[in-house]
Length: 376
Image 1 (tube, helix red, strand yellow):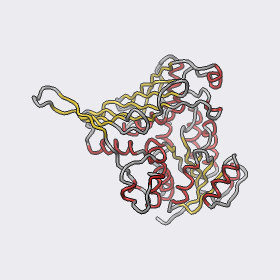
Image 2: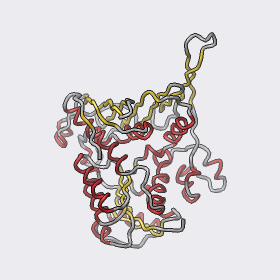
Image 3: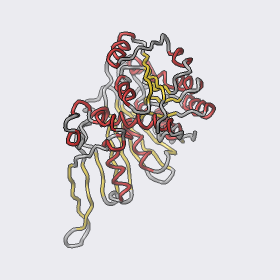
Image 4: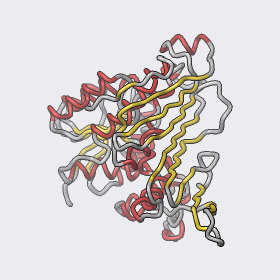
């Protein structure tokens, strides 16, 4: 399609990773940038040849020529800013989490439906090499029946911006939760969760959260169950955004570290036909770049892309942008607008993923009491 849109990227810390991808998208006519750190903003604008200036976030909202806004701002801002973007009559993409309260999630859903504009939660784990690989295993029947899920996100946030200090782990549980929801063909309806461990008092007081780690068991409407664990502070564990899917024929398990290759285990007959045995192999995952416009292919492998030998450099996933997810996120958001349809990770899917984590923390604070996940 020839339709083009003008996009604003707001927040250029992590958001800087997306600015050039938008600029290279064939259905984006213009990209504008905004950050409260004007030195950072100027560096990105100079690098990308962008001259348009905005003094405030409100100026972005007032500019009727801007069709869509991608928010990559601090977590406490997501709820209100998403509502503001939608109320301004613009399509909204927002980095995770969607919000940190159920009330803010509902406000976003209401604003989206009033405005008629698109809302997309930019959840990286749903466009990784790993997710695409498991999705193919599921659709091809390799997994058999899915029996159980597990998700993990281990990351130490010491000395990050102050709003991170003591954040309830499951308030940012989306990376561990999202693949389970997306692969389940269902929604999470209930959670039992527990917090564990202790933190320094200055971390506890910010959110009145005593736990550096939270673990949850989620119940899906279709009867499946999933387990998720999230750590944020004072826990000596290597970084990982892990996805584990256990099927009746095969299972997929993320390796030990975030950049480890995954294990695929097959359940096969014994030679004497008595019982079953398992065969486990480490697999290399393909790069699903062909789903993208050619101008975005290189962003799936980042610095490992060789323009003189593109097919070889694109053959296998090389770890760019949360395992190759960034250009897929941009493309889905842009094309949903251009094609006049809802994005895949829309307000309902995003709400269930995010609310499941919020409700998990509520359960953990009640020592594992069951909490129902509201529908939005």
